[in-house]
Length: 421
Image (tube, rainbow, N blue to C red; front, side):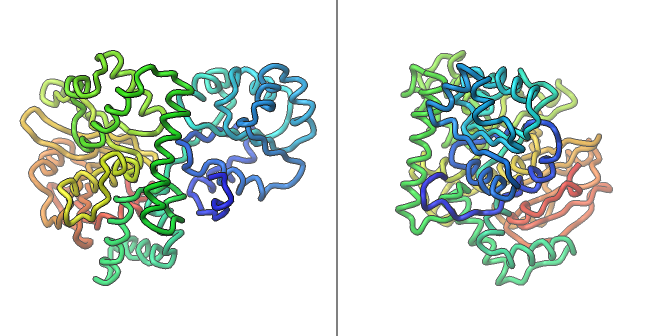
């Protein structure tokens, strides 16, 4: 988001957290995939701050070379006397964490850095900055952020209705479902939200994927198996919401088991996919160990499948919708877990926290009952609440003392911290 067409600022939820942390002494580090809007967000925050301040871009080879080779001279030129120091694309530094620690220890400036890979920054920065850094993650736009940009009044109505446990009028429900369908087809990269037509969207997604493969994967990780990596990506795109089958993926990609595990780790660390791990308390009965796979952005997933058709003609509508809910939960800071038993019972997501669990089921159609698997989970774990996200309207029921909320799919954007443990 650095060219002249990217001057539109779409408000990000993370901005509020950053503003609250600007007075804290710790370094702020924003992780996230390329083109999710890190630079735009940093610039927006930077422009709101008082002088003296400086914004540095480590894609400038001379600048990052000076930082790596002579940090004291770098400090005299760029840090000394500054109240705020922002460094974009910090992953380009070879000795990042060590020299950033020196700056933090010797200068009173507030540092905010960004990078396109949590793995790179974790290795180069976080380990050297224990107790000195706050890690923040920026994802592609959430559905809430897209609605707040495209239809802010519509979203405020939705939030108000959900908070009051009231149904939306049918015409509004239909509008939200149309917006949701579009979102599941094209995803949430900011440039997609401002694109003019289908052809431009396809080219944007192609560019994002090409940049990811060429710069992050070949550049940082120097993988000699680019062909296998691309085959793996396409295979995963066809399996969203399904268990990772290592043997099948190894055969399709041509990667050995150790190489496959390494590639999956890189995909997760570079914000391409998320792996949902199994939730269990009884290892003997809840035996599934393999994770389920989801893409962090459905636009990228659909580009890999070369399929942007509408829901009505797709066989993977259910997988798209489940992936949508997974990515929305992830953007709210939820660690993805699922429940599956030896006897075949399954709950799509289990949210853990504060000594309680909240089960979440996702249905592409209209649901009127919790379903056998969710009832089994409720009987076993006695959660105070459960959610079923479906294509219908808002309603609720009670099962074995658990309040079961049936929310329209798009209402996952309204989940607040108080709604889940």
